[in-house]
Length: 117
Length: 116
Image (cartoon, rainbow over all chains, first blue to last red; front, side):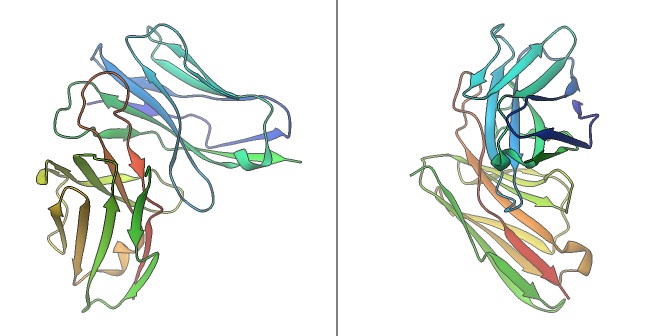
């Protein structure tokens, strides 16, 4: 079974600064997908960024980028120029490429990010 | 339309009540999911429907009964719930692709359920 570990229960960052959230995972599979979801106080889960394991290039979405290290099974999220609206719980999630009956997600425990003005 | 909607937003029910949660999407997704989420915890998968058929049941108690009337709708029928069932119930949907992009799950805003 796959596991996802987020070792930082809480993080804080100053507005306009950069912060990196850590995520490691354990799997015996070679083909899979990794996601970062954001859940603000409204509790709506919002997809932030996606990475396909077969792609060596790190995914980027505006101020959000990942550092995907497949051999190390590490998938960290970097938020640049942090904004107050980035304050949320961030979940790292894993999905096997083998699933054919719906994409079961395995979530980490989450990192609560606070952005200080 | 890239939205998953859920009704009601809030629900308070007694342990003897019967109620239903509703989820709807119009993105052409053929996989739909129910999750339960406690405060400050990740979502826990409950059920998965693919092509309107139940494909995954994560050993959920029978007091939770899912239903998928068509490819756009997903219901969760609740009966004889316990106070520990109080949580946020999230619905999600996705394509059924197994490779490439477009397989991410889109989540609804959730229903906050309180069982008294």
